[in-house]
Length: 96
Length: 242
Image (cartoon, rainbow over all chains, first blue to last red; front, side):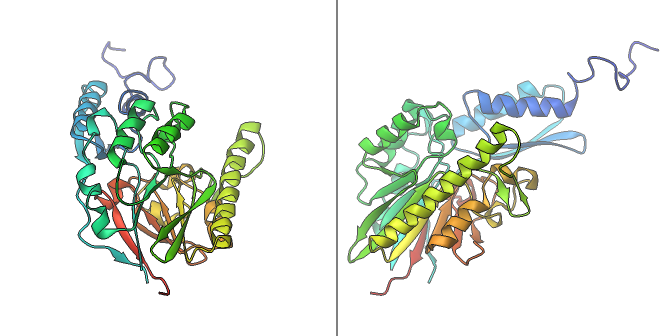
């Protein structure tokens, strides 16, 4: 077997670089660290990781994106994360 | 007509002080009261609670809140509650309050709620003690919500609103992965609302959900999580007989 061969199923050490587990660890880290973020979705889609959601402030967005890129370094990552809107509503819903 | 403003999941921290205040200051023009549907903080720390308190302190409309799961994370919900109360917020957990809006008494019944899932896909009170406690926690919360709705009815409220953090229905979770619905709400809350009766049910928690839903008994449900409504709050107009 050459040195560059992919690990076979059942070989030890196959989990650390697995994208699915890395995404799971990212989610754990987002919840545990300063963001306390549970509302952002991160999922593996067509070979890339897609991170989507709404965060409460511009600073949270910066922290989130930095954490995502740190935790998923080396993986293709697409992000679509927006900051919550804070305008007053322009109309009410009539429930009569 | 009563105008109920509501928002949940504002997740305030030190960097968000002042973000919502300009919109909240427009409340007297468009609403009779403001409901906060939990997850007001990120980790439930006193520091974060003080940011929320400052954001709503002195508003000229009554503010009524329930806490969410984030507000429990630091395991100091009593302290968070105290800080909000000191700023004039009525914080409900399994109880009701009456807000007088001119000649109309509006009853708000509030409870955080909890998970368990929806009919046909729900957790049962069976097996390991932790599993039983999970479901019992939801059942106790739903029972307290029903009791609070009955209480405000007995106190003569013409308009009654159920305020929770977790969802009573699956309708307003549409957009979330179905696999996590059991962590987002429970049919026990809807059963409590339908049993006691209400004019509106308001909740948060499901950031990727949908605003509009309805209980099996026909009570309108609104998911007011800020990422869902995409505003500082939404306003719902409820009819009265006057």
